[in-house]
Length: 290
Image (cartoon, rainbow, N blue to C red; front, side, top):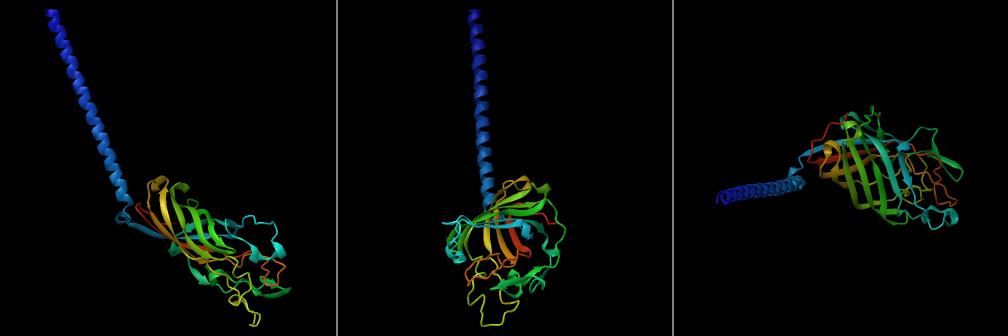
């Protein structure tokens, strides 16, 4: 009888401790579930526009050697009659990498043409100095911090000949941390732009009946476009928000040559800095550019 009572007591203790373990396990599961719901709610709040309270503007300046315009392979390696109007820019891309600066440190001034010894050639004759897109350039370039930069690529996803109608872009906007604190930006929208418009002769870009002068051929600036912040690295991990990119200065004519007399022979390398204003709105504090 004593043995039986002891056995019952031991079994009772075992059952009691098993019940405690089960209760503790359920509490841990409930706690984990509540924490998961809380984290999800916090992420949803971060994605809410009302929480995007941090905004700042930056200036990106890109040198010519840090900018590339890549034309995809055409139906034939050399277009018939060597005419540029046969090019199809679908799939063409622009690749850039520029420094980030404080707008207060960058002064944009009017710049009506390059130096006098840089000129364009048409039909064997000089026609004047080359013009910068927008006819403006930075007065000087501040010293660049290697941890602040803007780089990436845009691809033409919709085009009609040389006319680009839409693009898709991926950019890195890095703001300190030795280049590891970066915002990831996606931009995909309508984007109407013809990079060769001023190279091809037309009534709006070049007129033989008018006197040729330095202001005759002015390249167009590309339109502004929006972008979405899809995340980040370093201190920008989990960032959401949006940006707006506006080009305020550009380079000279796109280098092009053709045997067709209706094409301007812009045979010299492009000159000038590409300056972009980047307005950022996000849920993470933004540092001041150096």
